[in-house]
Length: 189
Image 1 (spheres, rainbow, N blue to C red):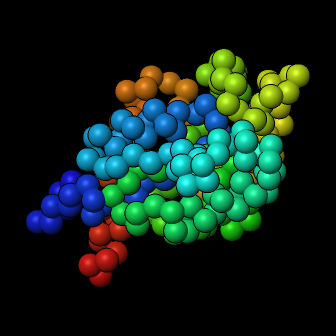
Image 2 (cartoon, helix red, strand yellow; image 1 turned 90 degrees about the vertical axis):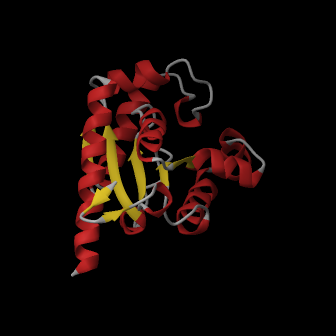
Image 3 (cartoon, rainbow, N blue to C red; image 1 turned 90 degrees about the horizontal axis):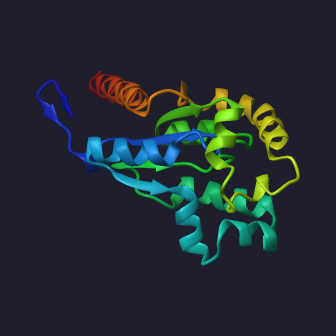
């Protein structure tokens, strides 16, 4: 990425955090954007699984959701490089007081949204979503979206991921590049 006469390489770019509900495309878009900007792709859930030696489902079963949320906060504070990454954040990562602000303080944060029906279609075949292992997953999606929206709305620029993936990627890339340019301008003032 060029800015004036300065050329930034992937590992010196600010982190990009993709936030939002499960099934909104954080991982798929994150991998595309990481390749596009020559950044490292990191999935917060996968990193927590590696560091704990347990699956998310097992962490929930053995320790409960609250412990998992503490592990997410630790990951954001200390569990990944400070620059050069696209981080796909777990769906509930920003849904605690102080977490939207913490994530935004670490780099560029973009929130992906999709309609409940789109989310249901994308996640309905997965057995690895502990919060959706209920009798009526569509109802649960709507309840969780309603509960989490106030946090998502404070977590960054909101972008719909329901459309054409190429168009979504293009929009996310423009937002990220614009934010990086603004950060550079502020740093030069």
